[in-house]
Image (cartoon, rainbow, N blue to C red; front, side):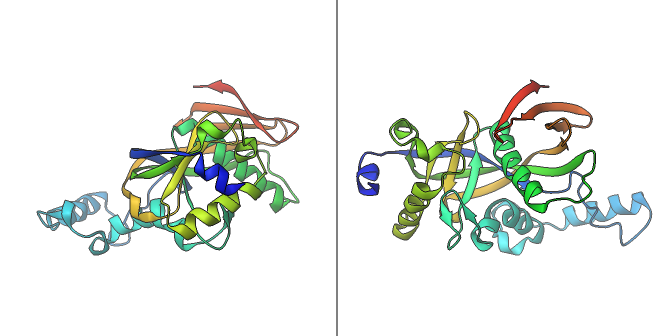
Length: 248
């Protein structure tokens, strides 16, 4: 079955961005506040750090720049070094997932967040549960299989909770060194990039921060992008699926 499926696929020479949605604090830590209590001193330290950067900083290898390396690790390298079972991996190798739009990434991450909250089984559930997220733009340059034209023939590729076929395909693509694929999200109409190697990912940039606010009684997730301004509201259906009921 897998041989036939792969033989029917087309590839895309992909050059563009994917959005990577991760757990993160909305407000960044001040790197110099342990040196002084005075904000003016913080600004002086920041200016000194900027002045000390080499003129060719943009071409400096990332391993030589701790802050850029931290961004690279968070946005790109982390899933390849911290292995977890996912739709296209049985947990023996890492897979990186990116979304085509912010809304797609919200549906994907909200689904997994709700599963985490359910598995945590809070004894005293708060009125509102808050999760903070950070979205990166990441450049992708590589030849990707396009699964989207085959979803009608193989609906299990985008069925929530159905991982068997996807994991079989992921094992083969990873074993043979294929860089990745494009498919449809199992939770909304957006597209997902599934990447098996960090070699085709580069240039991580901050895109935005999000707050997820879940009201278990109302079965509703409110997503805040700008302070106190709703970006998207999701309703949790009886079958566990998510439905957008409002957009900012």
